[in-house]
Amino acid sequence: MKGRSGKAQPTWSAALGPYKLRPMADTIFSKILRGDIPCHKVYEDDLVFAFLDIGPLSFGHTLVIPKEEVATLDQLSDETAAAMGRVLPRLCRAIKAVTGAEQFNVLQNNGPMAHQAVFHVHFHIIPKPSVDRGLVMEWSSTKLDPDEGARLATALNKEMGG
Image (cartoon, rainbow, N blue to C red; front, side):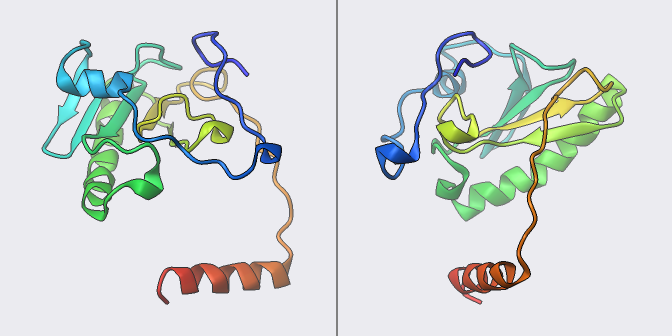
């Protein structure tokens, strides 16, 4: 599988066994946070950093990262997750106002099968100015069996402490 850079991206299949991320490596985002690599900074506070994507899908494509260096969303602390949640809507409003795009996608991937290319939590805010610009994707949905849905919802609620 090739990423935006045209280089092969990590692949994984169930035949290889459970997927486990390696310990957090020094990523391009780590280097940006340290100031080793320049970026076009859009926003910064104590917990969150946002900058323009250097390979944008559309004008205004912005990356939002936590300063906490973890690979996937489930590893993020509640404090940092809350900070990200407070900043994302504000950035979306700013991007809409500046780009003129009325619609946008917020995308976040976890693990190689989910198309994560940089193993540091990050959200993409991608303006959608037209049908063919911005994020373009197909959604292959299925039907949820009502009994299976009830069992799944109960198990998830229990896992959440409910």
